[in-house]
Figure 1 (cartoon, protein in one colour):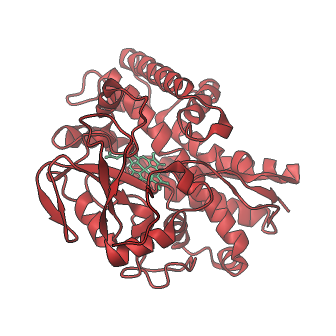
Figure 2 (cartoon, rainbow, N blue to C red):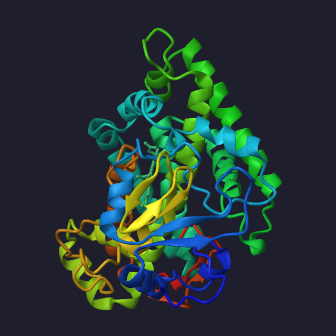
Length: 408
Ligand code: HEM
C-alpha cells in the first residue's frame, strides 16, 4: 500500500499548485502501479466514487491501445468532475473526437487527418518560421518580460489559425476565446466557468459559420477541404465547429507549455542550452515534451471487467492515464530526472499512448518547438531567468502562467 496522506487525490488542482507529484507517482509505480484513488466529487452515475491511477509506462500504453476495453466515450479529459457540471454538459462533449470510440472516431479521424498530412504541415513551415522570428524580435526589443505572453503563447495560436485558414482579422477573437476556455480552475485568472463556456460556444458558432461560408464558396484552404459539400464523407458544419474547439484547446495550451517548460529547462541547464545552440539536435523537441509532459493525464472508462497491472477493474470504472508518471518511469528511461536533449530513443507518452487518439498535431507541435528555439538561439542566445515560473492551478495541464526573463 502506498504511504500517501489520507485523502490524497491525483486530480486535485491544489496538489499541482507548486509541482507535479512525481515522488508520489514513483511511490505508486513501486507499490501499487494501478491504484484506486477514492474521490468524493462527482456526478451520480458517472463512476463518481473514484478512479484508477495508472502510473507505469507499459500500463498507460496498454489502456491507450485497447479502445474496445477502455472507452473514451465518457469524457477523456475531466477526471475530476466539477460538482456544478450537469450530465448534459458532459454528454455534449461526446461531439468532440477525443471523446469518441471507433467506428465513429475512425470516421472523423480519417477526415480530419487530411488536414495534418505531412504535405500540409510542410506548407506552413515558411510562414511559421517568419512568425517565430518576428515574435522573438519583438520580445527582444522589450528587454525583459513574461516569456509566456511575449513568446510561448503566440506561435501555437498562429499555427492553428494558419492551418485552418482563419482570416487575419478574426485571429484576435480566436485568441481571446481560446484563452478563456482553459484554466478556470485557477482563481487568480478570474475566469468563471460561465465565461469559459460562453467562449467555447462563441468559438463553435464562429467555426460553424466559417464552415457554412466555405461550403457555399470553397477556397483553397483546409476548412474547404474538410467540409466541401460535394465530397462523400466530409464533416458537417457542426462537427467542424467542435473540431476547431478541440484544436483550440489541444493545440494551444499544450504547445505553449511545452515551449515555456522547455525554455525554463534550458535556462536551468546551461550545458543543454549551449549544446542546443551548437548542434540543434533533432532529438531536442521530443525531450522537451517528455520533460514538460504538458498533459498530466487523460482518462478512459472500462467497458467490461478486466485486469491491469495486478488490479481488478470493474465495468464502468474510470481509469486515469498519468502521462507525467509514465514519462518518468525508470523501466523505460535511463535517469528520467535528467534533462538530456540528445536522449535517443525517447519513447515518451507526452503525445499519448499510441492508440487511436494519439495526438493528431504531433508533427505541427514538434515543428513549432523547433522553430521557436531556433529563433531564440539565433537572436537572443544570452536570454536569462529573472524569476521562477509561476504555475497554473490545474490538475490536467502542467501549466505555467508567468516566466519572467531578460531577453538579452
Ligand atoms: C490528442 C498532447 C499539440 C491536436 C492529444 C493527446 C495528447 C496530446 C496527450 C491524447 C492522446 C491519447 O488520448 O492517446 C499534445 C501535446 C502537444 C500537442 C503534449 C504539444 C506539445 C497538439 C497540436 C494539435 C493537437 C499542435 C493541433 C493543432 C490534437 C488532437 C487530438 C490530440 C486533434 C485528438 C486526437 C483524437 O482524438 O484522435 N494530444 N498535443 N495537439 N491532439 Fe495533441
